[in-house]
Structures are given as structure tokens and as C-alpha cells.
Amino acid sequence: MEILFAKVLPIIIYFTLGIIARRTAIATAEQGGFLIKLAMYYTLPALFLITFSKIHITTDLLFLPLSGIFVSLAVGLIAFSIGKYKRYDRKAMGSLLVGSMAMNSAFAFPFALVFFGPEALTFALLYDLGNALMIFTVVYAIAFYYGDNDLKGKKIINNIIRAPFLWTIFIALFMSFMEIHIPDILHEPFNALGNMTAPVLLMGMGISFAPARSHVAPATEIIILRMLGGLSAILLVFMMIDIEDKQQIAMLMCAASPLGMTASAYSILAGLNTQTLISAASISILLGLAWLPFLAYFYM
Image 1: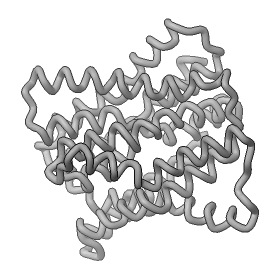
Image 2 (image 1 turned 180 degrees about the horizontal axis):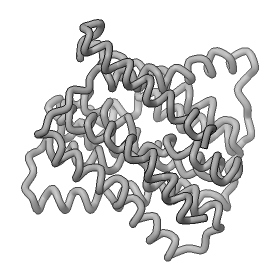
Image 3 (image 1 turned 180 degrees about the vertical axis):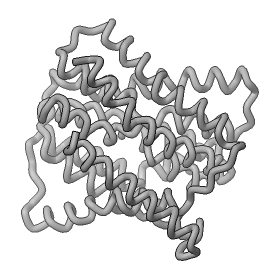
Image 4 (image 1 turned 90 degrees about the vertical axis):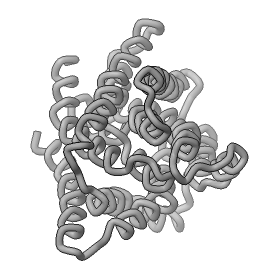
């Protein structure tokens, strides 16, 4: 439990520092948005590359990232149906889809490691490949399709193709399959840049965080879809294919994880309901501190 607390404490500290910066006028909401963009375009791709270049993917484990894609699509389909039924406007629909589809699988990594060991963490990382591919392609396109800063289809595709994080995924996949490692001379700067992701992104979210009562209901709906919808979708996968126990728990914890921080970043970039998504992400992280250990304990 002490190790787990040590993993979670920085998340709380970074986010709180952002809130303090906003409350004391050290930083503005616009500056918080800049920090989020900085993480999205620089530190996050570096973190992704340094992490996945260490993992060797074999064809018999491809079902892990494919499951991540399936869960995201399944939850997105449910969210879209709910949004249509309730006749949400464009921004509300986009926020619902982005928030429910973008899972923060990385939040589950320390839990998988602490409760089930390094092997479970490896399976969680592989599952997250599918999630990352969805976030940086489909979820990105949805955000800009529904947001105030809406882009035409061709422009969205061009942005996705040029996006550094998408190329990072392809490069990391290639390096993983071919067992190519980052040269020693580049390892340290990439690692240092990647390690900046959590503080930069979380402080940016904290600075942008300005909750209101009007955000509670839509945020709650997004959280339920993300965490319970994801759990239901992965249980459906378990019913369809035979999966080892450690693989199951790694997938389960990732699928039931809180909202991805990229959902908040996309809301700022695309012009969605930013405060709703930041509120949902913040609340879901707090819930996740109890939710994921509960799932781990129940599964054990």
C-alpha cells in the first residue's frame, strides 16, 4: 500500500499545484492550455517512444491492443446512442464521446505492478497500444468534428497524419517488432522529456480547472460510461476469447480506468465543453484511487 500511495501522490500534488497557481493568479487558464499543448506535442510522444521501444510484441499478443481498440469503440457506440437519444448539441455530444472513449490506461499501470507484478504491467502496456492508437486518431477526429474549432474532414486527416504522437506510435511499434532499442546517446534526453509529461500535463489541467455545479451531471454521465462501460466491454471480450488470468486483470484494470488526460487536452484544442471534461477527469481520478484497488482485490 505504501508503494501504491507513492505512485498516486504525485498525481494529486501536480494537479493541486496547478489549482494553486490559478487561484493565486500565478497562471491563467490560457497558460494552462499552453502547458497541455506542450505535453501533447512534445513530452507525451517522448514518453510513449521510450516506454514501448522496451517491449517486444509478438503476434500471439496482438489481441491485447486489439482489445483496447474494441473497448474504446464499444463505449463510444453506447455514448453516441445516449447522446442521440437525449438530443445533445454538437459540443455536448463531442464531449461525451471524447470523455468516454479516451481511457487513462497509464493510471492503471502502478496498480497492475503493485498487485500482480511486472508481467501484468507488460500486458497493460500492450493493451494501451490499442487505446493510444484510438486516442490519437479516432478520438482526435471526433473532438475536432464536434468542437467549436471544427475542421473539415480533409484537414482533420492531414492533422492526424502530421501529428507527432501518431508517428511515434508507428515508430514504437516498428522498433518493438524488430527489437530495435533507442541509441544510448538519445535515451537520456528522450527519457528526461518523457518524465516531464505528468507534471506538465497535470499542472496544466489544474490551472484550467474551474468546476461548477452545472458540470456535475454531464461529468457523472461521462465517468459512468468510461469506467463502468469500459468494464462491461472488456468482460464481453473475456466471454468471446480464452485469456490467461494475468492478462485478464491487466486488461480489466485498463478498461475500467478513469478518463485520459488527453480528453481534457482535446477539449481545449478543439473547443469542446472543457470544464465538464476537466471536472470528469479530476473526479474520475479520485474515484480511481479506490475503484482500481477494489477491482484488484475482488479479482484476487
